[in-house]
Length: 309
Image (cartoon, rainbow, N blue to C red; front, side):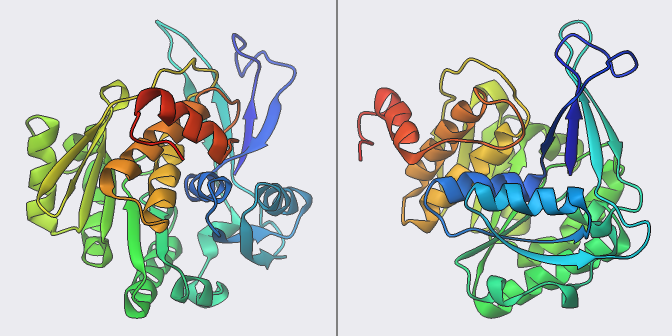
């Protein structure tokens, strides 16, 4: 999507200038992974317009290959969201303008699925199937394609209350879970969408038992993260960071985690890479994590003496 943000401290209804950028859950993950050495490919449908071309050009500039279907239908557009920063007692607010976005009409046959068939990991999120019946069906079809090809399937719940209700989301998510190997879920989503109660360890074990994922990763905000893999629990704290912009932090975590997994790291290393990428993202304006592997290694070297490469 296109992101438009008034300067911090200004309101949408009075601002006379906006910072423009791009953002999207899957594309944010792809950028973080690409900058950490992964050959990342992003699949989507975009309007054949200046704004659509801007998205593809910016992602390529961050090292992501794009497999895009260009929609020249009259009225097709790029989804937009407006981000209004706020502090206590008024929080940051997001206003979506997604009507008639090209992606809402995507079908499986429009995308280059050979990129999925030849991949180590296929990643998607719970935002995409919320956009339309077409995106829900395409998400399912691409997960099935990945499973048939032996590609590991990664899914980030990423629940958005402005798109659908917890009940609607849960029904759709559960219909996709049989195809998912690695699940990422914010702890708050596990509680709000799936009704889990108890502490994070109990929630992770509950999800792992109920859905039989290979790996369950719970992100917990300032409390860090934990992963359940092979019956063993792994935990990781957050790393200190000055917050310039928190948007996209969770996506950077996923990108860091998956990049390390693709390169053969164990679960503890994957969690550490996720935490490091998330910390670095918080220091950068915009949705995408502009970082380098050297920066990540330096951050982790300060925090974990056993990781120094």
